[in-house]
Length: 482
Image (cartoon, rainbow, N blue to C red):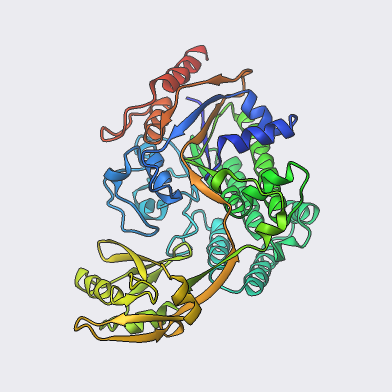
């Protein structure tokens, strides 16, 4: 049985990968593309293309309808084990770093686990081994210092301070490579637009160090650095290839260069251990409207106004519950609350539905619920934004107006997104001895986990999607040639 490294690059589209390989024919990504089995990952639903949903489908080997997870930190029914749990239960030594909902399964992983670092939205800093706790703390902190939740200047300064503090509190010699690579590539730009990339580099370096130390049979590393850059810069990146230049375009270029470096290091490790490297994404991104603007300033100066819940304790107080709900880590502009009981949850939903937009009297919040949790997302209209007010419509029909800050909401502006989620993810399967590229048929996202489990000589749980037989046969052919 060969070791297997699963490298999940959230929202990476085929066209961007192929474009980078064409522009950089000597790159690691070009090498990977030319020496792999390749396929398109087919998403189950094109209506709910969200990272945590698509990743859960791939990791559990069941459809979204079956696993039922819709929002971050939703209570997970522990009946559909992810790929790493299924392998660990059958004696494979596993290492996990950054997988969505992995914190919910930490108690289910046997003692032979090599390392286990949950996602950055986990409710606490727990990680194993103990050396990884500092990284988890940093990544969780940086995930909360987004421009949406704070002012741009404060977010960037606090992120920069967090990175510097992290580097200085660790052994300088241990992080010398990190410091050198950051200084050479980004200099002090982590105070500006590259803080996510630096967090991604620090996380990847720790994953690689743990991998080389522990040498697990199966390992999984998840990165969202490319996805973050694409949302704000994919359109400008395409325009820059025609001769234009912009900060957002360079952000996408930096993200792809960082991905290329990471792939190069993984290819070297795979060659050393004779491991199989699998790189995948559940879906991709496309430029909005397929319109490549010729004037960078058009997009750089195009902003949108919205509200975020910056002070959830104020909304908690407004709900009027006997005991305040617990605010769970989430991804802006969503917010997640956990209540003491379903009755408290339903009371909160009733109160939240009383909040209406000024312009059309539509609900202010989009709500999703599960068990004792709800996930909310603000949906303000232009009239509400201009007045910074919302209506509260009581059950008896009376209405009053409330300022948004009384509810803990704060107005924010950001550059309009130019990248939107699109169906069809990438799948590349590489073996060190593989010398050509072979295109396979499209593969359902839910077929990835059972295929890889069976490829490692284990048995996929019976509730999982059937394996992708064409890809599985390739794995078996490799095994017979050994």
